[in-house]
Amino acid sequence: MSLLLHSYWRATAPYRVRIGLNLKGLAYDYASVDLLAGEQRQAGYRAINPQGLTPALIADGQVLTQSVAILEWLEETHPEPALLPRQASDRAVVRAMAAVVACDVHPLNNARVARKLGQLGLDAAAIADWSTGWIGDGFDALEPMIAAHGQGFAFGDRPTIADCVLVPQVYAAVTRFDMDMGRWPALAGAYAAALKLPAVQAAHPDRQPDAGSAHA
Ligand SMILES: N[C@@H](CCC(=O)N[C@@H](CS)C(=O)NCC(=O)O)C(=O)O
Image 1 (cartoon, rainbow, N blue to C red):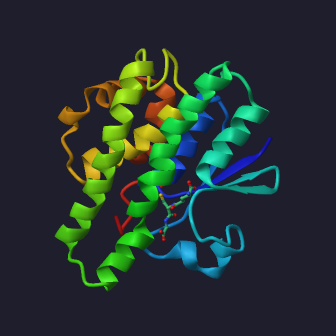
Image 2: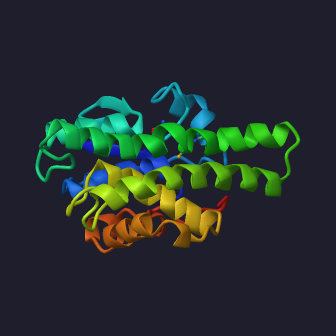
């Protein structure tokens, strides 16, 4: 199967998919979309993803978008190693963990939201306050979920779709917003465990072909 991932090194949604692809042991080609230069809004990329957002994964010519949909597609097409637990109730917990970030945190912190806040008159400090507030709210929700269900990883003792989504959000919190993870020990522990995996390490922003690109 040929796989081409449209990604930007620091962006969290493509990072989720890189982790998923690597955990599944799937090789893929990498196409950089420079978000700070606005390439995602240009006609060339909109022809691939009309929403103008990364990631987009082209799998044997078929365009897949929305990172969590891509992770679910990966799970369905490449079931091993599993990124969802066996029981439906456990799967619901993993999906809920992922949704805390993907549905309730990240959409409020997206680049286009920050741009809009700036246009509305907020300065950089106010925008950072906005972002860290929503990230903190999400982490507050995740902490007891991971404390109840994690056994090393966010859920159980092996990585799941929850880790694919949480790792990039914690990365953003720590590296971009300088947030102290001390308030969320269970989440910080799951993050540390995931970072030990070579598959997760290979997905790290600093290891991508466009890492440190001029606009970062
Ligand atoms: N819900 C989408 C979010 C995609 C998304 O917002 N991607 C960001 C990078 S993390 C992006 O491309 N932003 C460009 C922009 O906001 O202009 C997904 O999970 O794929």
